Length: 333
Ligand code: NDP
Image (tube, rainbow, N blue to C red; front, side, top):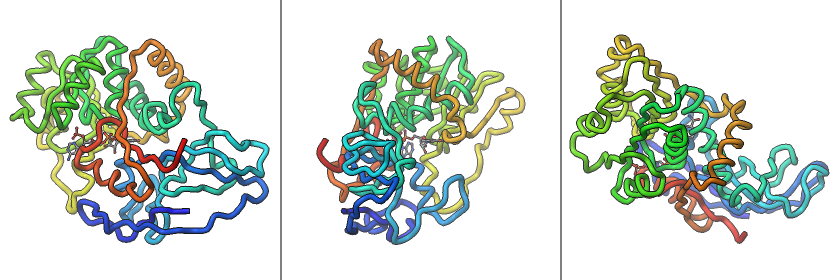
């Protein structure tokens, strides 16, 4: 079985040489265990944080060991009554072709709700992140104004369409004209701003929000956060989901220079980690099921093929080469 290991802790932008491809033997399952052939694996921005040796909400990856992350596969051998050969399952044993562990480490996925790979994106962790951040942390109310950064990504697309489904005025920012066109034409948001070509981002956001922003869904950090603070309405909420622009920084950067505005405008800035908000899951699936059925939830995927291309897929997240969810297809369906 092939797997990708962390070879060196990246400094700044990760490089292909920070990863290595290795081969291991696959043994048959023991009592209570199952063997899964992975079909899809996810690469996610949060993995950059796990490559650093520091205390965080998840333990760091270890040098010389296979990386971990979301994966979807099929059970090919089972010594557990909980899962049968043929079942599709989700796990955190990504970055490898085969996964062997106790059945409890896997969750069955229902192929009826959507394609199995969607459980790594819209129907999985990124979708839940969007839901928790927008509804719970952002305390979204119907008809409000919403600004979303990295709007065409895995999390961003769900945020945009959920907000639209709640009758909101939605503006997103993304890094290419194609992404902006998809956001306006397919995801149906009110306006998309190409932050790379718009010139002055502050002016562009100001023009798009003549009455200000009620909820800012933060995926990017840096200039985006400062601009959002400038245009927030009184009692606005900022759901701090991620700050990908800063993940490869090698030194701390100054905070938003206008943070003082949070006082006068009575803003709420709250960070969150999706795994602390799993109470939303029933509401999430109920709402997503309805939206998908009604044709009101669209998504895109960018797929790299073969486990050996997983590092490339991961690196591409930082150049915005992905439209929608970045995935790696590991084996045949
Ligand atoms: P995406 O699918 O959005 O992929 C990352 C995107 O970020 C790229 O496509 C690119 O889009 C944009 N990007 C990359 N570098 C920069 C940069 N320097 N400046 C501006 N934009 C950049 O990833 P996800 O949807 O999986 O994640 C989105 C955010 O949500 C991330 O910050 C992630 O860490 C966070 N997250 C947080 C979770 C939580 O529990 N708090 C859980 C899951 C994700 P573009 O072309 O538009 O620049």
